[in-house]
Image (tube, rainbow, N blue to C red; front, side):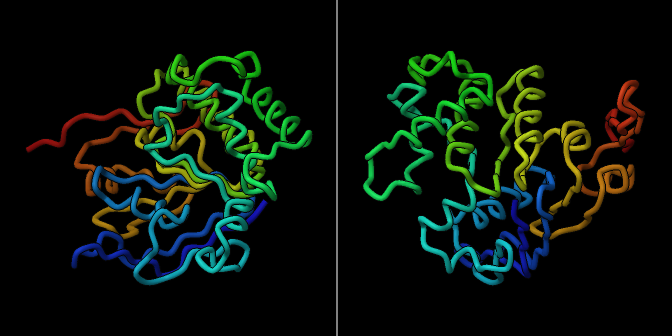
Length: 257
């Protein structure tokens, strides 16, 4: 496992500052959630973490090493990502999609070793998708595709996993299944999440981003207060304990005008 530190990170695009002076830490093995309204800067922040975007200022550190100073191969051995656009139109079998995760470990691109095959098979079994190996990726349901993409990330054998809205377009059963898989991976996880109740249930720590700035951080039950939800999301929230876990859950209605 590996610690992630985001230090004083800012992103400017075409003269507009999309992310401002963000400081974030994910301790080794933690599941850290990033939440905020649409357009708040969550995805921009995560794109800097998985190297799709270079920050204008600041750094992303993996156990103290500057991520953007690593080679692409070394970075991919430490960190895997499921960006929002990762569910693309792969005209491959499931086994071939998962095998893509082994590329950072291969000396010759496309040369698959016995170890690669074993790692991929184990990753598919770990996410309960071993029976899908010979299926075409395009034939899968949304939940099945997400499980396969998680298997691809696990086959990469990273120590950090970054996910941008991993439960979008999934039904509630699939959402719970995907987040449980991620939670049980044993990796350090940094995820942007849209559903605040899922974030409260699965995350150890939450960071709240609003207008590109970090406005709150801490354990979910301390962060998701009625005042913050009114200020950041523009809703009135009522907290109730989950009848089984006791984790605070949120009921919403409109703020009075």
